[in-house]
Amino acid sequence: MFSKSKPMWGKKTKLKSSYDVVLIGGGLHSLATAYYLAKEHGITDVAIIEKNYIGYGGAGRNTAIVRANQRTQYNVPLYKEALDLWPVLTKELDYNLMFNNCGNLNLMHSEAAMNAARMTIATAQFHGVESHLIDAKEAKELVPALNISEDITFPIHGAMFHPPGGVVRHDAVVWGLAKGAAKMGVEIHQQTEATGINTKNGKVTAVVTDKGVINTKQVLISAGGYSAALIHGFLGIKLPISVLTIQAMVTQPLKPILDHVVSSGAYHCYANQTLKGEIATGAHMDPWPNYTTLNTAHYIKHQAEALSEFLPALRGVRFMRIWGGLADMTPDMAPIMDGNEQVEGFFMDCGWGYFGFKSCSAVGRHMASFMATNTCPDILKPFALKRYQEHKLMGETAALMSYTPDN
Amino acid sequence: MALTITCPICGKRNGYEFRYGGEEKGPRPDEKDLTPESWCDYVHMNKCVAGVQQEWWFHRDGCGSWFTIFRDTTTNLEKETPEAKE
Image 1 (cartoon, rainbow over the protein chains, first blue to last red):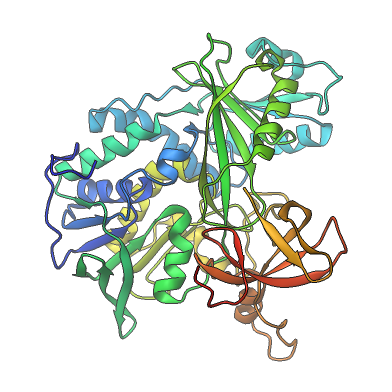
Image 2: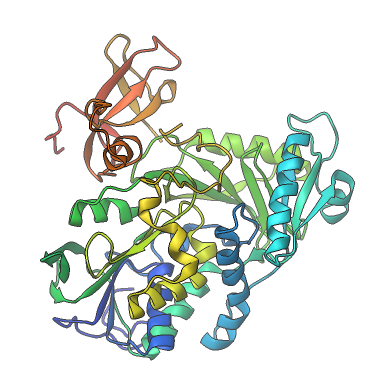
């Protein structure tokens, strides 16, 4: 991967001493920002600085689900745009992103949850996103493997059905965007660790790395779960973030049984069948902040119990692989995107929790516009850091998240 | 993941008996001279240290004590002091 041979996205370049823009983190948000900086704004003197390799973090660890059925009027348009961009990017990048819009089914396990779903669906429909409320019988018709009997821990009352959502091959997005960005002149520097940001008179002047100092006037930190530690470490800016480990796993490959992404809040579990036939499933988070990506037996048991209740056909199926990644959770489950506010030339794109993958295409596009014009696009304005001071937390979650210390 | 926490009353116990209570942020700011910034800083803001941090824990399935420990967030191991490296 780091050998002398040519990387898959183009030539290996030498790190220069200055760039117009430096992006810290080689994940999807940086790659997409770089791609759109070059494509839509003609800014090609851009370096992506990645400590490991591109797609090492959340970009390669998420379970590839995309959807636009969030709760608030600020979030939905962003995710809708991201969803609409997958087929466009597939063409533009000339790279098969394997977008499979199989639809998402969010199971509801009480009448209160059905009412909450009605509200979410109204928001979605208002923003032109297809989303319907269906009853348990209709859910069973869509997903015959579903257990709609009443003798399970959380009987299914119905579901929120969101047909345009689905699954995108996450590695393909990493490779496609890297290739697309590099073709226009963006440089990707793997195995290069950012260790500081230099400022003078409240302006960014340089990024310090273990391979040398890079002079630049603009820097973006979009390093997924590592963003908050970097931002505090480099600039002393504290963020309302808790970094938690989130685990996921896949079963042995099975014949086609599940044609949708099925998720359940009450069971804390989602599942979909990959093109290889494995059931990819996850959702649970470990309840204390840490930077490890360790797995727990506790969680495998939880997942097996949940799946064997609402998808009983999976009883006895073996798990094949399990892995962990980091999710940077905010108290209102909405991200933080800001720039030129704390330090001139400093931009941040973090706090995505487990929504970073779904949003990367649209956010990269808007962050690129933000950085190129130094004007915050309207769609990003509600996500500024000062909303916490102003007590304008977003209602993306009905209550503070139970797995952060805030609750 | 393996985690043990030393409760001042019950001693070293399985981490799943406890509930995480957030980073140690010093005393609650005085009502007098309170600004939206200082309140927000106390309520929401974290340092998210990748390394040793002082943090609060609650012995939920035990004696009910609230106490702080030092823990390395990159290894999940408890430390004696904030400077502990290995």
